Image 1 (tube, helix red, strand yellow):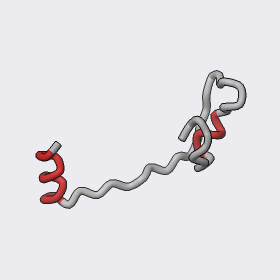
Image 2 (tube, rainbow, N blue to C red):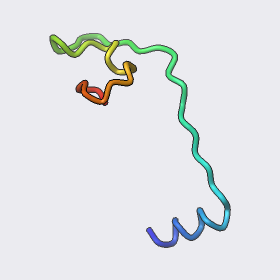
Image 3 (tube, one colour):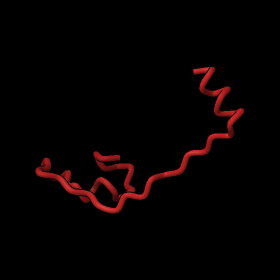
Image 4 (tube, one colour):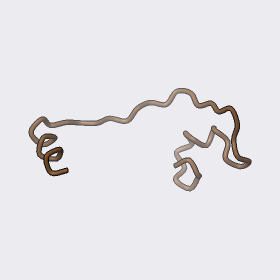
Length: 47
């Protein structure tokens, strides 16, 4: 862990979020539809 942290500091590694463009599923539990995967609500099961 320390080696990775040190390396990240030296290389100035930056991470960015990925853009989600589509979500699909072959099945879903009632009340937990795939649409909730990108709803930005921390209270849903997908968060």
